[in-house]
Length: 347
Image 1 (cartoon, rainbow, N blue to C red):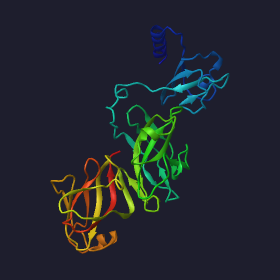
Image 2 (cartoon, rainbow, N blue to C red):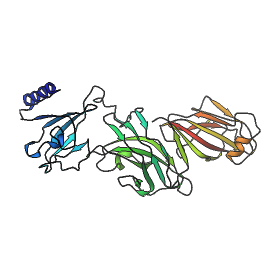
Image 3 (cartoon, one colour):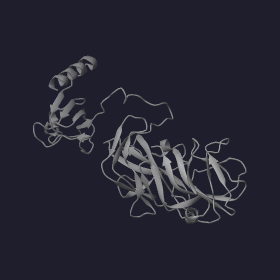
Image 4 (cartoon, helix red, strand yellow):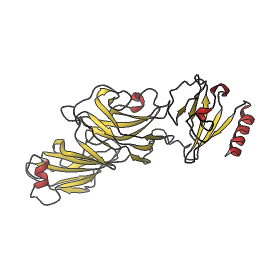
């Protein structure tokens, strides 16, 4: 490790012509001579490097003499003595995969663990995001949320748990809100926020948070309250099924807009049921030419009636959606209501 540090220092001198010192330590904090924060700040120069190996992890840090950021180990380390504005800043370690940027407009999926959503104590207005980690949408940073965070959809966004989470405007009725994780540029900490499905995240992400990742969604009812739900893996399950489409009437497979129920370009399947005045069969699928699934609606007005109906099974069905998240329906011109219970998404 010491040999590697020496080689790194020599390479820096050879390529930049700027003198820099490389420090090797066995702890980030603690104040001892073997800890990085134990190094007197008076001896440190801008662009010095540090390698810290504590027996479990290896950290690469760079000295920013003008940073002045608040200490937040391991992202920001301040010398215990003569710190001034000098701070050690944790650096990314370049690799073949981390240096690859996806095409413009393409977000990476996968690479996420935890960060699932559920209603918090104030079920109508707050969402809890569980602890977890994920790659940002460009694959540059691993974003780690070390504890559960609660965000409020009915208050303007502010950093921290228990704070406002709405990134733009005011919460509306019967709307779908995307939920994003953000990485703070200064220290790498993670926060979350809500944004209406019609708004562009690049425009409304918080200042000082360059990198982000879509992690899920929430839907409001006619009173602008969040529908009760929970996430199991990549499936959002509503406590009570709700009527997402009313009075559908189509003699042929016709596209039906599910943007108020399922996130655009992120939905794979929806678990739905239907009811109409006659109980006539209904067909649906992912395009206009092929009916993939059929269901036997019943003459009823509630989801409970659909579950308890006497018509031939199935009364509910997983339906594959279009790439945009919609479904095609053919119900022989009978006015039909569509109820949704679960949404399977790609994160």
